[in-house]
Image (cartoon, rainbow, N blue to C red; front, side, top):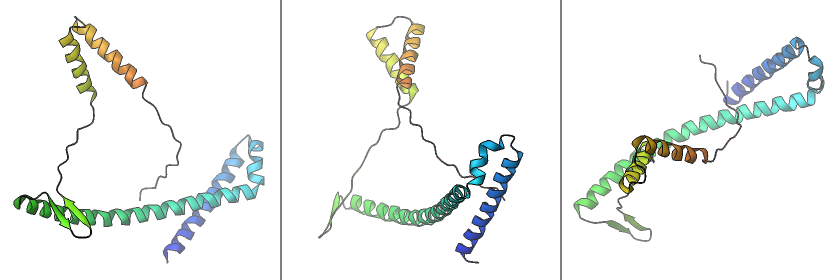
Length: 173
């Protein structure tokens, strides 16, 4: 059975299951009149089911391609890291900072330094040290309360993003 046949088979199962669930829900619901438009309007129902099926097919393809892509990229990155280590060791041994690649540019050995994420404890400690050094607040309890209030205000002013998405789950086998 080809992959397309498998997808079509799964899609047919989804359609049948979905139709059965809708019918059961409509039959069991005491407010059936509220849903009469849905049950009577097969075009809307079919369009919805078609879009659900297309969504699932697209999701399946994305998952498959992403998995393949990740596997290939992982292999390439590991290879690149090994080559990079070799080239860096060679440049260090030769006391060089770059390789001139004719017509292509340069391959430059560069050291980068990055800082870690800001942590609340570090912020509290830094504010405490500054307030103590400047002697702006005398009592420790008052200073700790002040710091906590400042951090709480900062947290409240942080922007919040909200988005509604579909989350697909799978039945464990």
